[in-house]
Amino acid sequence: MITYRDEALISAAQAIDLYIRSSLGERRPINNLQTFESMLKHANLTITAWDGDQLIGISRSLTDFSYVAYLSDLAVDQKYQRQGIGKKLVDETKIRLGPDCMIVLLAAPKANGYYEHIGFEHNPRAWTLRK
Image (tube, rainbow, N blue to C red; front, top):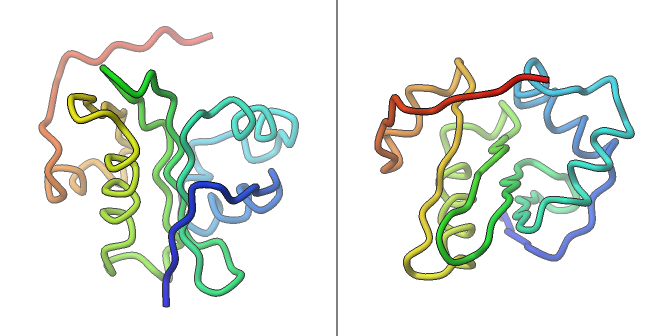
């Protein structure tokens, strides 16, 4: 049985392992433990999915809980994909946000087609300013 938690403290090593198993590791600094520690520490809404004691999914967001939440990472272990876990992680995120709070994200290329399937609307006006 899959469980979802918003209070679980996970280590950077656990997160990196999951990101590798989900393919999101291709687009994240998995070789920089310090950056991952900071990513986890400074996210203010993190939902995790567990199969027993194994971390199998994460939704990591930065939000004001009222107007907007930036869903910076949505990752599900490839062995567990196509079971509704990603959608459930988004639903669990929405439950914890204010009723008028929207969620925005930048899709990883491999996941671009996924988001419309779970109710997101495509918006071509995203901009990034790289370091």
